[in-house]
Image (cartoon, rainbow, N blue to C red):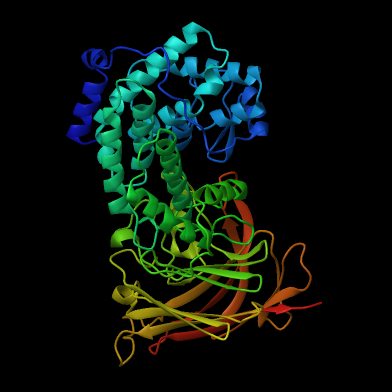
Length: 538
């Protein structure tokens, strides 16, 4: 822990600092805000039984979720952010409102004094916003005692938020804090200065984090959706208060929406790159509808490093970029040139997904190159330090060709990895070629041991895909659920095998799956592998 953090924690938790958070408490809000998102009544009913829906997981926490619970940090933050309030609101009953008020009072009593997790700026900002968005639901039939306690707490939190040093964070966590600043300024008398602070922080965050093609610098589709949703909330709050919407806020929404559309497969959920999950398709529909940006998904995002190809019912989404700003972060996955392939509403080729808990063994395993549908050498991850990735695409009469290349294996093995992807006009023929090209024209130098490195190309299959190696061993038969016909995989230039894999596309569970593997030696001249997925009828 840094000295400055220790000093800050000692200050915030001191009795003297608590006195500075006191002040006049209004009897009501200046205005109430409308939540643009719907809740889930079924999740609300489960919550009344003590089961909380947090980050896609249902967790039993009982009557008092803040007493005697042992939660991981992400679940703890989700609980303290109160995003689940809208699920109770969706039930539309006074019993649900009463339970919501009980939970808020329990939190207030548990957190009268600053403590680290519940008062982190992004958690604090999210909680303030969610309390504001649900104000009418919470206070409709509330007694004066609840209203006084509720307002006193939210004012106290709003006074602390702009002082929190975490506002300087230049990652996605700054956006919930900004939302809280703006919500408190618009709704609470005496907190108007938070609007200036919030809009200044917003301007800086958008300049630093949102790339010219609309992508977020951490290159995670899930994060893209969540940040866009928060920007839409901020815009809606400003519009409802008759405040001017900053030009860069609207521009960011305009750029981010087409790229978010590009990240979606035919099932309406998101592709899996750099720490994200599939997310909920209905929620994705809500986000895109609220953005109200017409137009199709973009095909190329050169700054973010993604490519999208579509023909017929087939969609390919490929990673053609490097870690954000060239710097790996905790969300960075080492899957250069990996791709996902879906047909209609069915996913066929996927990446393995992500695990949100950074201290989990699965977190690191799912970040590895091996957990992506791409090539690796000698079980070594690619793109760890300052990689260079290029991509070019052409299209002629419906024939689409994407050529990508990275140098993540040059330093250790002396080769570039080049991948070509082809998609036919009907979408029933997907071809690829993976080349390992020596950096030096004279070819690779042999290792001192004389043993050639081994390459392995993985095509991870979605758990619902049935796969069977053909009788001659030269291909794999694939069948998608609830579809006629099937697909056949062919390859040359390496040995084909079918192996176990794992899939963590959602937060709920790890699922067993399979992967097609092509393997072989990396010789002095490099290596070349050609492969194809072709649809078969009948």
